Amino acid sequence: MVSKKSLLIISLLLLCIFIFVGCSPSNQVPEEETDPNKIIVWVNETTKIYHKLTCRYIPEEKGPNWRRLTKKEASLDGYSSCKHCKP
Ligand SMILES: [Zn+2]
Image 1 (cartoon, protein in one colour):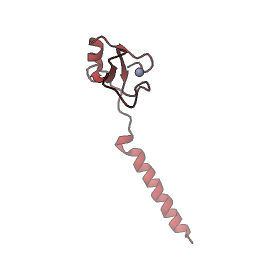
Image 2: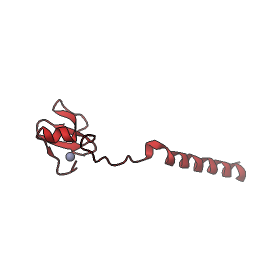
Image 3: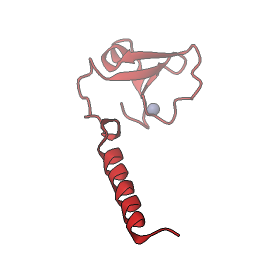
Image 4: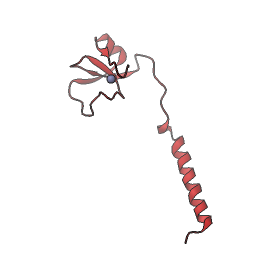
């Protein structure tokens, strides 16, 4: 039989865990980067299109035709931006 007191302690503990998880730095959304020299994009050598790292059109298993460049390098190299993720 669980006493009311231990139930209270357990719920307090759970609350503390939730607060801790909610405040952990890994959960924070990083600031949106706007400097083209710092934005990293995936470029597809075949389609000549570059994507945001989070674009859903990037396959999980990237072939040798995928490269990581900065947005500036990608546009200088003549790649065009993806119409879906708009990097
Ligand atoms: Zn894309």
